[in-house]
Length: 278
Length: 258
Image 1 (tube, rainbow over the protein chains, first blue to last red):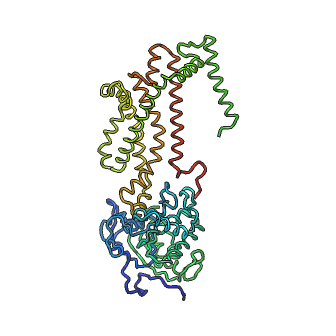
Image 2: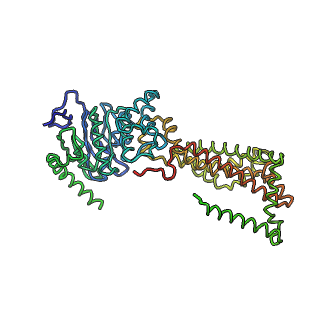
Image 3: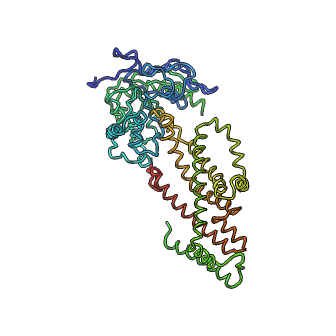
């Protein structure tokens, strides 16, 4: 079907390589805030090199799961392991791409990108070499001395991408990273992301409400139930060949077939969610 | 930007206001005992400025202002940043801070004179109490209002507590602190002048008090003019400094749309 290497999917139907211990293992995780339970008994694993997309209706606790993996929030019940180690406190082995602008406005593009290395005590000369390389990779050569307020939304996202990836994280977490961008910039950023990801295939957990984005980027799409007390309701393997053209992939019959299947599962949850919060 | 026409109107206003005042005094409509002629006030200012003993008074006031400003600001920043980060301590100390802030600072002047004497330090203390709260509340606000996404991001990128303070909290608070510095410099001057006015042997406030004691309205008004110029010069210096320190903020019209 395709000459390109197939992604490793953590699904029983696809054979796994021998050393495939899951990068992220979420076991029976419940997240409660006072009397409110956001997610209940979530079980999820992300294989090494797998691109996992999580979709669900608004307010189903998608971000809560991501924040728990990053160690920003502590699960009320259950456990999370990252690369075999239990998550305890804020994890420095993840790269987190936020939906909002997370750049430090008082630092230049270059300083922002170097931040993770600086916090790890890397010498300035080495930091400069790496940040140059990353800025070139994300197509922002020549923007080193700019401040975030001088960049467009797409450019800021590129800086954030470089900032998150420069520390070579075990897992990349993304919380609706491109939802604030216009459709063309979004497609452009999605292809850039896939291009960068394909270089070394880190595990990715992508949160999105956009099913199209989930299918066109992911190896697997997981559907979460409507909140509160949301949980995993379905999991679909996306066996579309890579590399993918995100701007055109939705015209692929295989894509449309998958879209129909996943949407019929997601629709039920979205309708439930609307019934609760009209 | 002011265009030439606006400038001319401004000039006209000055001429009408001060010319009318001067004419009123000459024509005997305005009593110069209460409203001395602008020319007399200007003459007094020139007389002072060309007299070397005036600079002794000016130096004292500058010194009191600067000391009150520096100590008040430092205390305000340190305690403001600390309480901005230490939520529990802030909760416990909150009523005390409110109570102290509720005291009109002027009534503290006699207390400081009692404790520190009629010299320099009672004025500095008064200026500190005025400056402190402005900087304090701004530093507190600055630290508390840091975007939580930036906090999460920095922590995930591996920032230690010290890194957070140096790279996130202090720069975020710096804008607030700097904007409060402009306000508080006026208050530092007020503290110094009131202190001098209430009891001292030197300083611009002392000059005003002396003129008042001699029913010399020209001296009082000249003192006011000198003070206004004094504050304007400091404010200009701070505006320049602010522009050099905060380089990362968009200037007007420089912000790019998303």
